Amino acid sequence: MTEPRRAVQVTIYLNEADQWQRRPLHLEMLKYLREQEVAGATVLHAVAGFTGHGRVKTSTLVDAGGKLPLVLTFIDTEDHVERVLPHMKEMAPHRLIVTEKVTLESGEFE
Image 1 (spheres, rainbow, N blue to C red):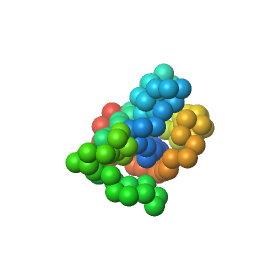
Image 2 (cartoon, rainbow, N blue to C red; image 1 turned 60 degrees about the horizontal axis):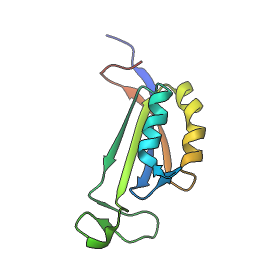
Image 3 (cartoon, rainbow, N blue to C red; image 1 turned 120 degrees about the horizontal axis):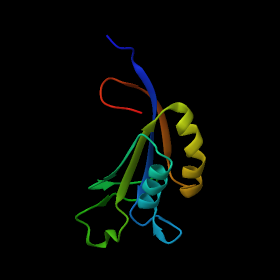
Image 4 (spheres, one colour; image 1 turned 135 degrees about the vertical axis):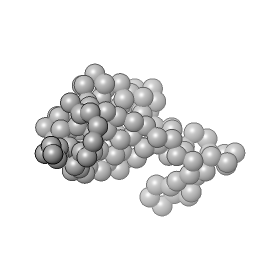
């Protein structure tokens, strides 16, 4: 039996309208993470959600106007996450960013 492997998973809550240097923020974050050779990253597009005290946005609202929630998640070693996280915070200074120490049960990593 192999030893459990440890990693850090980061979740960043965004919306479709967020931008970085006039480009979609979630795509620029993925590009940065790829350039930094992070182990894995995914952006999920929500069908409904809200942030803070805002109203619930759904994919069926005609006036949603590109503000549906997005969730970007990435995973890597603690050292690597500590290296890339400051830039991610700079890119999304007012968005919720959550880090969790996780145990890898299966799958390729590194």
